[in-house]
Amino acid sequence: MNGRATGLLRAVVSVALVALVMPGGSLARTDRVLAPSPEAASAFAPVQILDRATLGRLPTFTTRPFAIAWVTIRTLAWADLPLNGSALLSLKIAAGSDADGIVFRVVDGRRVYSPGNLGNDGIRYVDGYVRTGDPTYLDRAVVRAKKLLSLSRLSGSARWFPYLYDYSTEKIKAPWYSAYSQGFALSLFVRLYRVTGIQAWADRARETAMSFRRLGRVTQPWVAYVLNNRLWLEEYPSATPTHVLNGFNFALFGLYDYERLTRDPAARDLLRGGLRTIRSFGTTFRVPGGISYYDLVHRTRFAKYHLIHTWQLRDLSAISGEPWYASLAAAYWRDYH
Image (cartoon, rainbow, N blue to C red; front, side, top):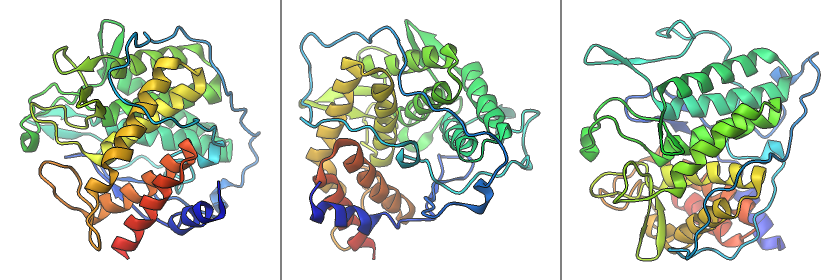
């Protein structure tokens, strides 16, 4: 990477204290800390991190129906993976939790859980385990992964994680599925395998990756589809998909984790396809001098999601080695500041 691109990456790396919340879900933090946390000091033994798993390949594309970015996918160190390096999650049981210590909400008299929040928190607990060696963090991650599995449904060979409440903004009725939460679940299962070596987690990762290989919108359920030769990963796969940027990118991060673990050609195609879509539409989300669009249909704008877009683009640059994404991240940073 040339000096200019490196400077741009450094310019945006200071994005911090970003809040992320799914509709009706619990707050999850994605603040990246740049100095080692004092909480990370530990007497526990260091964690061994695996780099590869042997799994059956996803079905390949005989004729790839979408354009891809011709980039070489790079292997990031654990500390540089998306969502890693955030402030350590508390090990205290939050008020309003169930018997497993998981926060829920009540809708129409029923307990419901956000698959996205379960996946996101699980990922951060795995990272806490790696950074401290404290097995309590791993326990918290496993509890959330098991909850995801208890909620999940298999359709064919693909595993899906439903939202069991309606989402009126997008006119979606329960159960519905999201590339956002599928991506979080995929990353969680991959990272659990990498720190435990338990094959079952790798197997669950493959089932989850299969959900992205099933291209919609004719086949149900779906979270990925092709429009005008571009691959879209939809946070809200409604009758009129809205192209939500942050959800798209979190799905890409899941595909990245899976592709690096397996070097699966179909996963690489999906990852490069998503990167090509962002290359085509990344500037369309931008509002020069202002807060970027959350999506391309409602064109709503939120400061917290603008900051998320900024660090996501930075991470896409790190993943692909392509300075263009870092340049756009720097532009987003200037727009907000």
